[in-house]
Image 1 (cartoon, rainbow, N blue to C red):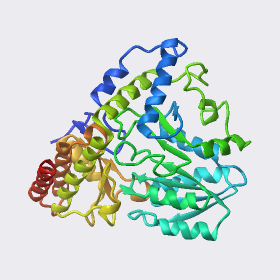
Image 2: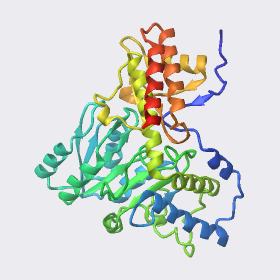
Image 3: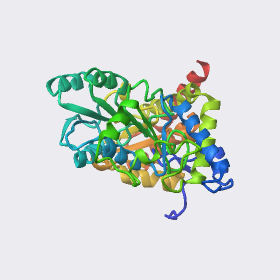
Image 4: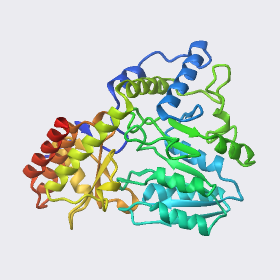
Length: 394
């Protein structure tokens, strides 16, 4: 049977972009107000304070008008000065990639790099900072999405604070799907976005900036202004009495408002539990089929995405294509060094439900079996269901 290549998938179980919550989709279709209408200015102020409540940060966060790559690049440009020595922590493709942005602005970029199926040891960071007291900024990715692995940013943050340096965190695909916050990690800059676990389309960034970070940014003569990368342009734009640097994305802000309402009404702890249970159901099913997880330990596996190692001799590309064609299930490939070696199943926002984990197990197992891999799909589904039943009983 030939399947039409242009037919959309039935279910998008990717690591991003993710499907949006129905409330968000409805909100995207509401009235687009003039940005200087008093009603919109008041709405933007209330929205920023709502985001502050959800993030748990000390100051009103920035809501930047572009998906989180904008905020990550802007963070590097704003915080890092020409005389700074930066330590970049690379445990995956995205962590490694931040080092390239840092190198544009820093005097020197040092790096701790580990295999991309492992995580950064906070004690290695402690030892490095002790040996290199000149380091002023440390950069780390919380959930390195192309590997499905987690770095312990709270432990790393404590080490960085002890050394008197500033921590810059990429929490794009972890925040709102697990217990993490700017405060608990002692982050100077904490970048995330609503397009992952909050269940919005990719369009905006959320950035928590500490008092210490603002002081450093404002003392940096090379920090961008009158620019899409500028943090300072947006520092006070949250106030209804202040102007916007440029036209904000009104429809997407309406969607963000609905997503924050949903997150706060369900309750962060309940949302985190839902993500964790979905990941557990998925992983039990994958393992029972006879397939390995990509992370060396489940202790460092993210609850927001499951990375599955491909069996010997099988490339991830044909598996993804087969799962999409046979079952209408779209999942994510690896990136750069992990491309072809693994498949990522997203558990973010609307798809952080155990039923979707069963669909993913069935689709991946069926696709692998069709391509000649020895997998036990029946055992995988039974184990996944048992894990879901156990979570309900608990």
